[in-house]
Image (cartoon, rainbow, N blue to C red; front, side, top):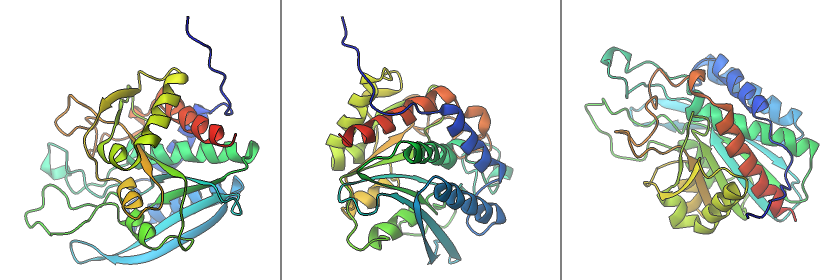
Length: 302
C-alpha cells in the first residue's frame, strides 16, 4: 500500500497555461526584429507586472553568425526582491526563423510558430506567476524569459561559421546579470513542455551540473503521479539556456525538456518545422510540468 502524498502547492491551472500559449502563438512567429516579437514582448512584460512581479528588461545588440546586428530583449520578473534565498525559473520566448527540419526545402526559410518550442515554457511560467500573486511565498522567485535562444545557424547552411550561436540571451544575462553577482539556490529551465505524450529524460548537462536539482524535480513528479512523463532514463546533452547559467555559476539548473529515443533528431517530430503549432499542445502535459514545478518551489518555502 502506497502512502498518500499531501500536495503543498496550489492547484496549477492547465487551462490558464494553455491560454497563455495560445496568446503568444496568435502574434505569429516571435522572431527578433519583427513586429510580432515586439508585441509579444510587451504582452509578456504586462502579464508579469499584472501578476505582481517587479519587472526589468535587458536590451542588447549582438552581431550574429551571418554578420547581421540583432537586438535581444530579456524580460525578468521577480518576487520578494529582498529575500536572500532565490529560485530561478526560465524559458525562451523567441521562435526560430527557420524550418530547417522540413523535408521540403522551399519551407526552410519560413519562421516557426513555436507553440511548443518556446511558448509552452513561457505559458507554464506565466501561470506560475499568476499563482505566486495569489499564493505568495517567503522566498524569492525570479522568472526570466530569455530572448534569442533559437536563432542558431540553420542546418541547411553551406558556409559554417565557427562560434556559439544558440542561447544568446541567456549567455548575455549569465555574463551580465540584472543584479550584480546574482546567485540563486537552483534553477529550472522549461523548454518544449507542452507536447502530447511528452517524455522528460534526465538531460546530460542537468545531471552534470545539478544532479541534486534533477533528483528533486523527478522525485517530486513521482510523488505527484507523473512518472509517465518524468522518466528515469538519461537523455543526451542539449545545448540550451541552462548551459550558460550553469557555466557562469548563477544557479545550478536542470532542464525539463521533451526528449525522444525513437526519432532521428531526438526531439518531437514537429521540432523546427511548420507543424509546431497549437495542435501539439496538451493540457495534461502542461499540468504535469506546471504542478511539479510549483510543488518544488512551494516545498522550498517550508
